[in-house]
Image (cartoon, rainbow, N blue to C red; front, side, top):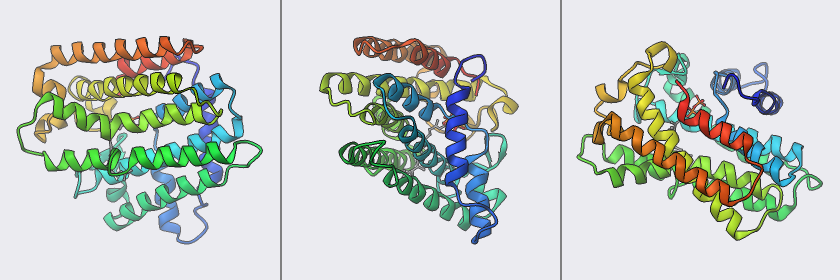
Length: 295
Ligand code: GRG
């Protein structure tokens, strides 16, 4: 995210992750090494930057935000490790480096994902009562667990697997993208608002819609750069979705129409963001980055 002032947020979440992850000199060494390998592997931290930006706007406590953001990045890292497994997407490369099951072993990768997910909720449950009310803390735990479970990210991944090699409509693909990608982005945004005890239903609804649309734009852009960016920039083979016969927006409606859909989602996202009357400069800059990034 060069050129945009997000380095402070990335460094805050990285520091919290550094303190929260078990050290590699503590047993089980291999598991702790793998957990750190996948968390400090060059991720952009988009989801946690969203949480920081929204949380700050509403006046949330910085220490509480640090833990919530670290938990979100742990959940995200967990989902990528399991997504790359031979039984799911069978990807050998992640962020240009060997995927966890290649660098370690398949069993280690499964346990690494499990341990990251457990640590995320341990972190959320450890937030100081002076930094976050018990009600808000519980709401955030409820929100995140709901958005990543069978009616969210895990459910989206299940549908994705079930539909492999089957004909699929654009509506169905959008639904899968909503569950598997937009929901964690949405949860990151709403967690930022809840961390400041925001309970304004209209604002929360507008933020949710912003998250759903920017999440869909993010995933469509992921499809587009999968075709257009080179292998080195992507950190995985260029055109791998096509080679693996994965249904994507460009595969279903062509590259030019996919770009139009992405722009429409971005514009819808901006309309909902404007409705919230929040301090928007950085959120707009981050949203612009989401649809302009090369990797
Ligand atoms: C039970 C929570 C749970 C999950 C298991 C495997 C799985 C189900 C879900 C995977 C969902 C997934 C990997 C969606 C793809 C989203 C996507 C495009 C991720 C890439 O995000 P970036 O570009 O990654 O933000 P970096 O590398 O920057 O962190």
